Image (tube, rainbow over the protein chains, first blue to last red):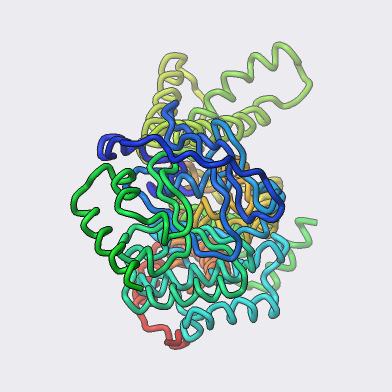
Length: 287
Length: 299
């Protein structure tokens, strides 16, 4: 409905600045849609204007783990999340959450879109936004009751934003807005979270708060998939990693998959990025 | 019933303007129409659809032309079945407005063009269509009435239509309040929560077309968008929450409607213009209110 120029669901065509895919994907067994698996993707292909932007994606997310989705610009990271949520139609393949379609498992899945795609000038307080996470539990036509607002306030406390509950969201800093948005996802009380670049453009304090929150979610057995850009922090933040460049180049435990060789395949030999990655890999080896 | 209401209002308001029956009709019409427009305007402002609403309201021009063109056809086909000259123009305004809204939405979704570009194309096209048909067929219908409106010409039937319109708009907003909030914040997020944003698009276009049609005889198509946008814009400056914005918009819409109507009686100006000027004055005041620090904002 919104007539804004942001938040298009169409995957952006960035073929021009995308490195060539220098590799065939690592062969992996296609996952079955097990009821024990928080997210299983089978043979997913997504196309935009008849041009595939994701090819033959097979992946099964491990339960109770933090999973980083990493790849160059235009690799299809955000598209992957949106396709899992049915926001973009699949050309082929299927996606299941605990063996169910997204429509069946909607309440189990929490989504955090990119902060830039949100209308932060919208006349709503931080508490209003977090309460939106409770909408599955509130009829469309009724205002949230005291119980729902208290639950939303607890989520704001979890991200250190309780003191800002009544503040209009446009009056918050970028990092505070991101924390409010994460609190909204928490309020949903999901089992699986899909987060699109939650660390983008936030200050160090917010980044630390988000990492703490992710670890709390993991401790509670939640599975969190995070689109992430900063290669240097991947080994520190994530248990598992998915290296994506239109196809899944490699996926698995960070310690075994996040290697210079795999990164070179993913990023097509960009020296600066590989230098960053080498530092990160070396640090990961020391820890 | 209208006589009873008239008598009650005259006894409650012993003012010169209230002695005129046409002013009482106009007051009743505007008392429902203005807050109805303002409430719908909240969504127009929050979804940045002022230009979209403008295109739909201006499509009414062509919609009226189509209605008048169809009158002789219907009269020849079903003579005496209905007062076609009274039924068809309002009906074609709504249908054409909805078609324009659906067209804009479809083209916007299927192309990479910016919304304002798509709306601009539709806006110019519908106006050109109306002018082309009028100039070619030398239609004599009173199109000025649709351009400028005449609130003091409101009949009891216009009052009834205004009440129904207000009821429909408030019912739509009440039933969809939470989904509309989520869509306003982020459309992808709303879709991920099973909110049918495309159906909302069409429902919203239909409502705007309906409200524009109902408002046209009162304020005219040149000013009807202002009835939607100005009170809601003022409310957005004042309110801190979405619910607060709706309440403020309705209050400002009602105050500017009633105040503008009474003011126009003494200033001897067009009522529609006076209403918009009062609303614009409130908007100017709201700019300074919006800059005040929020006493209750913590942190």
